[in-house]
Amino acid sequence: MSSPSFLSSGTSRRSFLRTAGLTAAAMPIMTEGRLAWAAQQQTQTRRQRPVADPNGAPPVMSVPEDHIAVYAGSSEPLHFTVLAFSSDSKPYVTADPSYEAGMWAAQAAGAKVSKWPLTETYAHDVKAMVAASPTAGVIYICNPNNPTGTLTPKEDIVWAAKNKPAGSVLLVDEAYIHLSEAPSCIDLVQQGQDVIVLRTFSKVYGMAGIRCGVAFGRPDLLAKLQRYGMNPLPVTAVNAATASLSESDLVATRRKIIADTRTSTFKWLDAKGYKFIPSVSNCFMIDTGRPGKEVIAAMQQRNVFIGRTWPIWPNHVRVSVGTPAEMAAFQTAFEAVMSAPAAKPASA
Image (cartoon, rainbow, N blue to C red; front, side, top):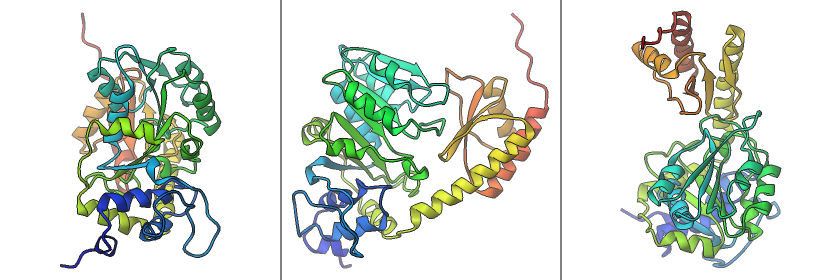
């Protein structure tokens, strides 16, 4: 069997995707299809060069190759960043609720975890997070946030990068950014700031089981992650990523499909008078007004499986946006569950 074209030229898989990441740095500012083209040109220049359009459009942005590290998914660089920069004297600062993997890594490192509630608009409270500790090791911002699917304005993240404690790292997780129209923070990496930005193929590209992700950061920051090792990328991940990025309209098409289904679901929730948090992602939170775990169990009895609760919001459940048929089944089951009386609390 002959090797794929990007391997037959003497290019390693990891080198291919690292250089392909040059265009990934522009996501979603530019079309995803350009990434595959940029990767094929990697033998021309090995240092820094602009990301150009194969159709002749002007360059969009330049990213040094040594500012890119490719991993088997974005979980590895997330964990490694926390392990590298957090410790018993350097706390890990995060929003609450938010994605918890970094918090667990911090606990494994013996670091204090400082959690701060979201704002009234469900954004990260960057001022509170920056002020949380003068010796903070990592300040984590998931944007869009998981589980709420809400955005933190770019200007807030820029402010956090400029005002954070000296020596700390701002870790921006953009796993869900392709599902929104939000601007990326990779330009902060270009500016040489203490920022690491994560991207993944696990969400809009549907490659969660195959594993491929990218970390963007200054070389000195990325070097500290490498001491924790790097799993080899499977050929299937390289080929799947390449095929995905060759489809120039993939992200926009999938984003619209999810947005249309999400909007339809929100209209139904509004009409029924259910409380929910508007989202720009493929998940959202519903305030059930009763213990969320009871609602989850009752939904399971109707063969509809929704997400979990978070300790800070025990009466909210996370719901993923499925197909129109799946969301119709969700609506039927959810209305039936919410129409039934809530379970009475156990007597003391």
